[in-house]
Structure formats: structure tokens, C-alpha cells
Amino acid sequence: MLIKKAEDIRSSEITPKSLYLNRRKFLAEAAMAGAAAAIGVGLKETISPSTSVLAGNKIDGVKKSSLSTTETVTPYNDVTHYNNYYEFGTEKDEPAEMAKNFRTRPWKVKIEGQVEKKQELDIDTILKMAPPEERIYRHRCVEGWSIVVPWVGFSLSELIKRVNPTSKARYVEFTSLFDLTRMPGQRRQVLDWPYVEGLRMDEAMNPLALLCFGMYGEELPNQDGAPLRIVLPWKYGFKSSKAIVRIRFVEKQPLNSWNISAPMEYGFYANVNPNVDHPRWSQAKERRLGEFLKRPTLMFNGYGDQVASLYNGMDLKKNY
Image (cartoon, rainbow, N blue to C red):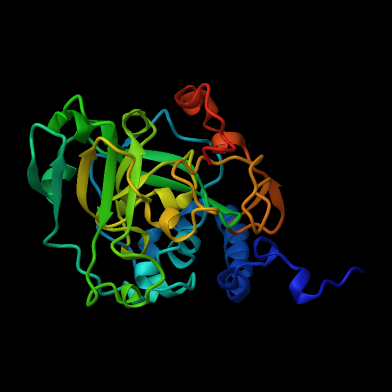
């Protein structure tokens, strides 16, 4: 048996702490699944958000989307208790605890920059712009773990078309909330707050780009980006801005937070690419939360048919 020293083990090979601590829960759920099968109850019913104290309000009128994957959905408890959300702590299990009292009402989003209809929109106005859809997307983190989540929202393009960007708008910049009292993790100088991300306009208009306000048929939990976030399934997770308070249309490429912090590790595009390693670990394989074996990482996270044309002629190793 090969025994590795601590310094020889890459962080991407380490079993997530929350999964290790929840191993008894995992076994219990497996037993529940067996019992459910015996009595004709679906597994989904044994792990649905409605059984969790963190569950939000149900979203009515959600339609299924043809853009969804048919892969097995990651259990709700894993998605809500293993989070990268530094505004609420740098450990994966901190956001669920630190964000539990985070207030998401009232909430307004400013629309600014190269746009004809500059305005400030109430969150509930935004939610009514288009019928909600459930999209089951693969979601890949740069650290090597992945999830499959039934997100609820509508295409970001629906909002963009309503505010009429000018011909000078080449990029869309997203700014997250900055509030030291409500987001205690911002008291640490981990990043240059507030969190900022951006997309090229054609990326933002792609049908896969989701303006998201729910998951598992219910409102977003605080630790997963409530009340409004972006989901970009072909990019690494840090591109998917959470708790958005400003959307600005600009001429020049935005300076995104992680690229400012560590430019050699985190680029602007952040397309999932198994052929471009992170400086500290390989991106060729990933571990799905709830599973123990790794699987090969797919180019563009498996969404190449929908997005590869956006990057025709680009050197994707240089433009990482």
C-alpha cells in the first residue's frame, strides 16, 4: 500500500471535510434510499429541500428546460453545506452557518453604464421579467469538485434585452453586495471587496447564461447566493457572481476579483478546460460531491456544442 506524506498530497485529492464528517449521514441516506425503494417512495423525497430547516419558499410555475442535463442531481444537503463564498468565510462549511440570518429583502439592483435604460430595479420586479425555468446544470469548481444542481431562473439575456445596451457595451460587469455587518467574511482582506465579475456581451447573451434566484424548486439559500446570482455552467464556479447589487455595461474588459488577487491562477474567461492545469493542481479530473471516485473533466464542462463557437480562433491556454 502506498502511503503519501502530507506534502505530497494535492488539495484536489483530499476528501472534502464536510463529506468526511457527514459519512454517517451518507450511510443513513443510503439506508433510507433502500427503504424508500421497498415502500415505493422516491429517493428525491428523502433528500428534498423541504426536509431541511434551511429550505426557502417554493417558487410557483417553474417550467422544465430542455437545456437540462439528465445526470443525477447532487443531494441538497451537499450543495448547501459545501460552499465557496468568502463573504461568509473561507472554510467550506462556514457559509451555511454565517449566512443563516442574512437579509435578502429589501434588495435592489442598479443597472448602469452603456445602456439606454439606466434604472434601479427591485428584486421582485426582476423575478417577474420572465417565467421561471428549472435547469439542471453541471457546475465545476476550479478546486476539482463538481455538483449537479436544478437551478431556477431565466436566461440573463431576458434582462439585458429589456435595458437596451448601447453599441458601446462590449462587456457586462457584476458587482456583489459589500456590507461588513451583513457579510462578516469581508472583514478579512482575502480579496479586494466588493466581489466583481464580468462577461463578454456574447457570453452574457448565450442561452445557457442563467439569471438565477432559486434551486431545487425553492428560493436560493443565503449561502448559495441569494437573492440573485449568475450561473454559467461552462465556466469555473468563481465566475458565477452571487448576491448581485449592480449590473454595469462597459466598453473595456472588467477586472474580476480573483484575477486581481492571483492573475497567474485565475483568468478572465475561466472556461472549464481539462487541458489547462491550475498552477497548483491538475484540472483533468474532478470529484462529484457525494462520490468518492474521480471522473474525467469535460471541455467546457460538457457544454461545447452550445458555447465553443464563442471562442473560435482563440488560444484557450493563453486566454484561460
